[in-house]
Image (cartoon, rainbow, N blue to C red; front, side):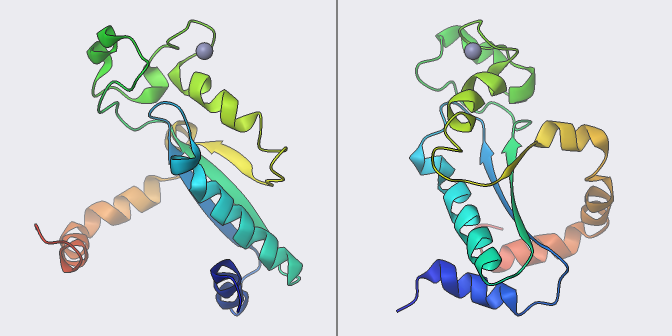
Length: 159
Ligand SMILES: [Zn+2]
């Protein structure tokens, strides 16, 4: 029996593309643990399988570092509630040891990536937004709001 990661890689390998880009992402809402970083392991596994099959493939990881803070995670100080709704990238490091909140919680993850044999390119969602790389996609989404709502509504109970 083949592993499901292999099945996904087999399916992707049939596509006629110059290079496969396997993207993963993690919201930097606090400590990055095995529960919210599994995306990275899956994307890395698929990328490696594709390369084993002789396909050109790279794995990228996008830190969703511009999402808004929705709740104050343990063990952050309670007064961090003043940052609720603000993008992680603009919130200070809770221990004063890093440039900001994002760097503080990314460091432990990025420092062990090589130990786990993960080959990925780390990107910042915040920097990608600023660079304008998403602009055409955002425009497309705005132009197709009604169609997007219809598609979402097919898969959710509450419209
Ligand atoms: Zn820090």
